[in-house]
Amino acid sequence: MMDPIVGELKSSPVVKRYPGNPILSSEDVPYDSLLVFNPGVVRFQGRYVMVFRNDYGSLEEKRIEGTNIGLAFSDDGIRWEVQPKPCFELRDHEIIRAYDPRLTVIDGRCYMCFAVDTRHGVRGGIAVTDDFEKFEVLSMSVPDNRNMVLFPEKICDMFVRLERPFPVYSRGGAERFDIWISDSPDLKYWGNSHLLLAVEDVPFANTKIGPGAPPVRTEKGWLVIFHAVDFDPSRGKNGWEESWKKRYTAGVMLLDLDDPRRIVGLYKEPLIAPEAPYEIEGGFRNNVVFPCGAILEDTGEVKIYYGAADSVICLATADVHDLLDLCISQRSY
Ligand code: BMA
Image (cartoon, rainbow, N blue to C red; front, side):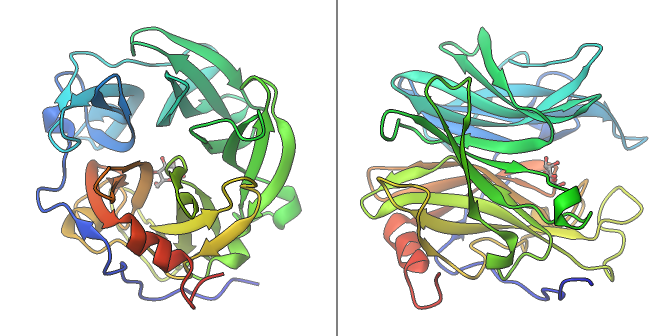
C-alpha cells in the first residue's frame, strides 16, 4: 500500500533565503565542475570553511563522469573563494566516489563525515583534518548507511552521531528510512544505536528522512535540521532524468542537551520547501532542498547551507529563537 501523497508544501515564514542565492555554483570552481551542491560548513581557525560535492562531466551531453569534494573559504559565510583544486576524492577498484560532506569541529579538530558509493554498497565515512590538505579516514560503516553527522562535543564522554541506514528488507522493500543515533569512544567503533526519528513521525515525508546539518547547541537543546522526502507518482520530468518524482524538504527538531536520544520538539511542517526558481527549475534534479550545514552566529542568526536542485549551493537564515519556537509550538511533537 502506498503512503498518502503529501501535496503542496510551503517554507516557514521564519526562514529568509539569501537574496544573492545561489552563493556558489560550478562557474565559481576553477577545475572541472558541472554540479556543485550539498555543502558542509563550519567556522574553523578564524574563517568559514566549506566543503562541497562537485560532480563533473559533460554539460552538453548532460553526463556525470565523477565526483570529488571541493573546498572554499570565506570571511563572512556568504562570499566564498574556491581553492584551486579539490581537497578530497576517494576512488579505487572498490570505491566509486565520496560525496555529501558534513563538517564538525570537536576540540579544535575538524571532522568530515561523507557518503561513499562502493561496489558492495553505500558506506558512511568519517575523516579528520587540521588543514584540509591531509585527511585521515578514521572509520567507514558497513553498507548501507549515509548522511552521518557528528555532534560538536562529546556527551557523557562519548562521540555521538546521527545517521541514516537503509533497511530495505525489514521495511517492506521500499524506501522507508529513518534517523538513528549511535555513540563511540573513539570515532572508530560505533554502537549503542537507537532509532531517533521515524519517517512516520514526519507528516511532510512519505518515503524517507535523514540527518542534514550537524546539530547546533542552543540553550533549549540540540537544534537539528534534517531532510525529508516525499514521492508523488504523478510528478514527471523534473530535471535531467526521464522522471524525478521525489521532493526533498528541510525539517527541524530539538534534542535534549544531556540525552540527545530524547526528542524535545519537532516542527510538524517543513522549515524549507522547494519554492525558489533555483530549487524548482533548470537543475539536475528539481524540487530538492538538501541541508548539510548550519552555523549559529553570536547575533542569534542561524545560517543554513543547502544544496538546491542538486545543482547549486544556497544560504537561508533564521533567528534561533524562531527555530526553537517552531520546535516547541503546539504543532510540534
Ligand atoms: C540523496 C543523495 C543526495 C542528493 C539527494 C537528491 O539520496 O544522493 O546527494 O542531493 O538524494 O537527489
